[in-house]
Length: 116
Image (cartoon, rainbow, N blue to C red; front, side, top):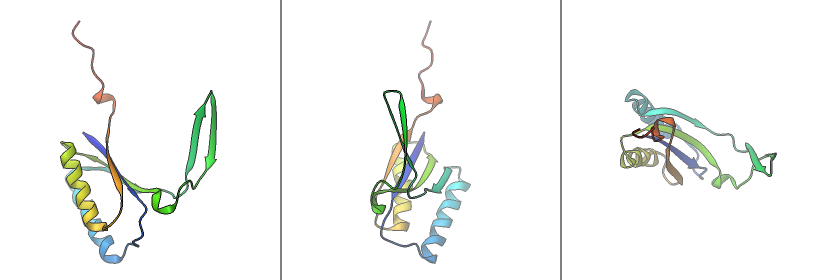
């Protein structure tokens, strides 16, 4: 199962020790094949709204910095519980903050054709 972990902006500025610990954590997750992708997100981005056949694109930012999603990790885990444990490892490194863990569904999750 794949899960998307996202984090919102916080008040702590990363220091060298935190970056080294996070680097080791990311290396380990990559080595074991758990981490599929990770990255930071630009603070503003674009908002796209589709309504009545019209698509509107608006430049950000849209929320307070502490409320914006600032980073993500796409992971492969055997269960929701394993995904939560991996997220706990992240939060033990970065300290206070807020984020989410959401299952990602793809074509392999679609029901196949039933018996004919």
